[in-house]
Length: 277
Image (tube, rainbow, N blue to C red; front, side, top):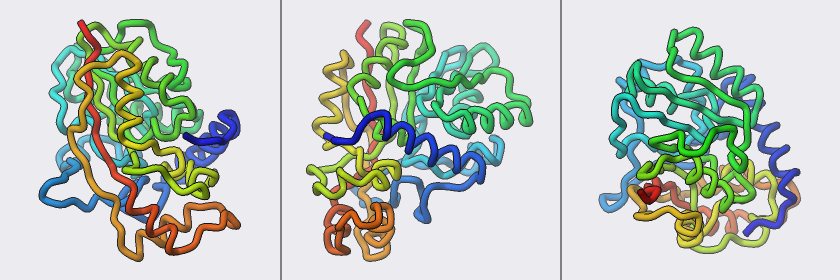
């Protein structure tokens, strides 16, 4: 668990992602916000295909995700999809094409700059079945039983109260509704310096939970059939270790060797689950 003050964490996250919205840049030099997408034959993390990306506004993809929560999810026409931490809107616009004109997509983000960017993207592209709402994941501005599918992409790891985030996701789902979230987890507890670092937290690293704890948080919220649908190891070469080291606050006392060891603990995963009927 992380010992940071929740209000301070939220403010740091809001400030960082407001900057990304204004500059339209990703949060690190790697291929995604939260690390590498290198895989092995036994581990895979589906990414976006060229056709998906060509059909959405260019500014919707800021490179802030760590997977594709829709890649392994069958979205049906007429459904309602809610995206937790929608950013520039990439997953919302992809979902909007899948649900069609009779469906709708709601993106939630706590950063006003991100909401403004996503709304501009929607207006420029002429997409009418997507809306973006300002709000926090622990207190979603959405009625009970609204969504057929809840998605999220590298955001729950940024939420101080992850159990509450899963409980809110369950609340807004219809009975039988689905959850599909891409996120960063660890295979073992992080070193103390990593947990203390605000810089690492807002870079999707310091707030990552151990996998079993992450899955248990979803189960304790009431989800069933909680499982890892895809996974990808964080790259562990020297370049990735240097990028990870750069995410820590100056003076955090993390050595290059410790950063490399920490890099080996991270994975990008997509977790799927169901709300009971």
